[in-house]
Length: 198
Image (tube, rainbow, N blue to C red; front, side):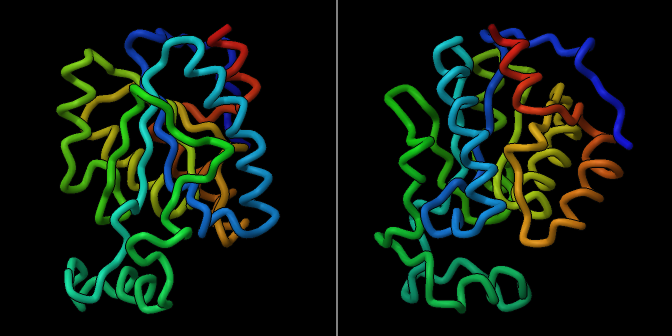
């Protein structure tokens, strides 16, 4: 069982960013993901009201046949792209309206699973003197895991909002939360986070 960190939660709104990863129309497609979205929606609203920086990781540009960005060796993205979905300009790649960005939010149009991979996110955060991250998204084994592993190497203080995350494999989700992500971040609930920013 993961440790409970409620007593240790200290959120400084001026120096904290919320990473909202892949809450896309084409991905919020089953009960587990819709349940995570229902938890994430008030978190995004409250965090924005409290003055935290909101960052979205998205596939906004989608995939294009005439703009190859996925090498055949990257079999996971090749398979993902091969389904014919998440094409440029499609509904699939739009951020879900329940957590839609507003003016002043940061949108990182990434090309890989990791929001830090090949992007200027770290530079953008450091320029704002942000050293703390609250991370959640879909999927736990993809975007969330990658963000946390990069973030710890970049010396960020990190929280993962467990009930705002989902994965196609529930057992993988539980294992990552209890045995992997909890080594590099404080795994908390959305209720814990909301209480900490009030």
